[in-house]
Amino acid sequence: MQITNRRIFLAFFTLVLVFPFFLEGSYALSIATFAGINSLIAIGLCILMGYAGQVSLGQAGFYGIGAYVSAILSINFGLPVVLSFFMAAAASAISAVVLAIPALRLKGHYLAVATLGFGEIIYVIINEWGPGGPSGFGDIPKFNLFGYVFNTPLSYYFLIWITLMLVMAFSINLINSRFGRALRSMHDSEIASNAMGVDVPTLKIKVFVLSAVYAAFGGAFYAHYVTFISPSSFSLFQSVLVLMMVVVGGITSLWGAIAGAIIITLLPEILREFKEYDILVYGLILISSLLFFNKGLVPIIIERLKKGYKGT
Amino acid sequence: MMLMEIKDLTVSYGGIKALRSLNIAFEEKSIVSIIGANGAGKSTLLNTIMNLVPAESGEIFFQGKRISDIKSHELIKLGISLVPEGRMLFSHLTVRDNLHLGAYAFFRTLGKKEVRKRAERVYELFPILKERRDQIAGTLSGGQQQMLAIGRALMADPRLLMLDEPSMGLAPMLVKDIFNVIKHLNSQSMSILLIEQNARAALKMSHYAFVLESGRLASQGTGASLLNDEKIKKAYLGG
Image (cartoon, rainbow over all chains, first blue to last red):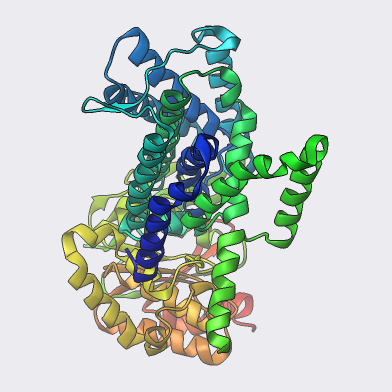
């Protein structure tokens, strides 16, 4: 991990630990928890899009697989939640391989449409054949580890955000490794990276699998937190939301993914004041952020800071 | 033994034949150039050797080994490096990262230290790259980008370095520098396969050359003999 990243990391980690003690009530904590779950999915998409240059409009599909597989395994098969978690991630990874192999030939808009199709297929499957059909199902056990049940909002908040910090540390190291360099090279020129000895097709499958596993963990965390899931949480709208988080925060920055996830999760809550006009303001904020901060929030802040240092 | 032998190679894009039953062979430690007009099939030839474009028929041998079915990313391990047309740098990465990616295929066998050593050798060849090692590749000047593209290919320490139009878009002085580097690399017993629009300069430094015309081999000979060939003079050297 680079030094600057390490500093940001420590500052953020401290903030995460201290933050809940300034919050009032469990509602705010649950919003923060959702922001953490969304961050998990957004980091995966950020690596896939911002670093590897692959488009995905189907992250909700992997998110849904994670939630449904983990929930079903723990309810119907009585699997310990931790085990069902990893089974869900494995299921998502396998589906990512199945998606990636034909999608490898596609680029840009075509890849976007293929992944969108994948997301829709998963949606249709859980809607038609999932327990409870369109109305979903409940009684999903809470997450538990070594006999400890995470049943208070505060414990779940820590579970999510500490996991997120671990995922973040792993991701930062990954991006700065040989693997990460290969990902970025593929983004710039597939021909050149192939000629340099990067096995581009295999690398594409790997990065799809990685983003799918992140989304699946997000889904499983969601299912065992809310304890009730229905297909509507895993529709195309969710894929678009995750895309928006990554774009608003800054597609080339992992920290941007977290920032974007927090903003997009918080925004509807803040905009409650506008009552029935909230969706209008929501749209206005998003459009203007794309128009005026098209690189994304975090990259722009970093740029400003660097300029500021040079100026003084 | 020939370093490279290409037998009866035919390549098509859709219905259009880009290379027609091409036969080419050349020896180790030589500078070989391929000249020809736009659309003659020069880049297609390099891309087919790298297996980036599939061949319709024919075979390619490198050091006696058939390489026609070897995947592009494996070829570099056999000692073939490509400096692609238009450089194709990783323009969002730093100079250093670009160089390190050049040794990507060897990272496990070489280790960090050796990779750094190789980068140092590239810096000796192109000192300006050392100064700019933390700069983003996309912000380098055209000449520096070409140096980086060559440096990146050298990180693999190839037996055969293939260059696709290295002089494209460069000022005459820089072209001279780049050609001097190519000669220097050859003097250290690296084989060079060069594609050039600048036929006169290419022929001058080549030991051997092939002339392509609409995908067919039109002529071949030593660089000096082709320079004095009346037909070649008329068609490619401006009379």
